Length: 243
Image (tube, rainbow, N blue to C red; front, top):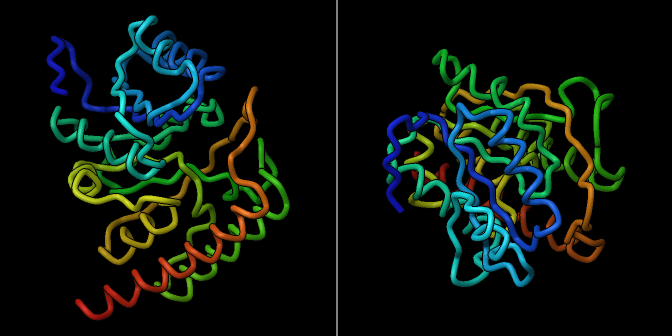
């Protein structure tokens, strides 16, 4: 998985993709055409649609997972690639086009200035006024998880489920070794908070996905809330025992 171009960037964009055949070309082309200063890797997470064929046909830089690892496993694969190729900063964006690459410069700037170790692109910093905000039910769930992390860690993060993130080389190494599997975003924040690293939340405008639908229905949302709540509590207890 080593990459050795002559003009390799220090910044890698990790794009996990599962059954994103309708969206993946537009987001990758947007990065290639508009933001050539960044490198990227698409992690095809065992898609059952035409995603793999599109990636191969278009010659996109990609990794094909042999089976579906889940979002956490796909992202961890991207971090392993980032570590093996000595990237200094990694940026996560979704393969469904909801994350606007125009904001990559904003989320990496504090890391480049050594003002943050972990930056979250947030929908809610500006009071939920701009861009796609998801459903009211999901926003309630996000507020609950945000409040839980605040109570347990005394650190306020508003958009704990945002998958738009940038991290420095410290977290590239950490996440290459371990990344939460099922619904990783809140637990990854918890891990960063407990490591006492500098976390910064900056406003970004999300876009609604053009095609396809979210895999998280009501039943999965309930499962998500129960599982993530327990994971966060267990994670906090674990750090409390060790420190």
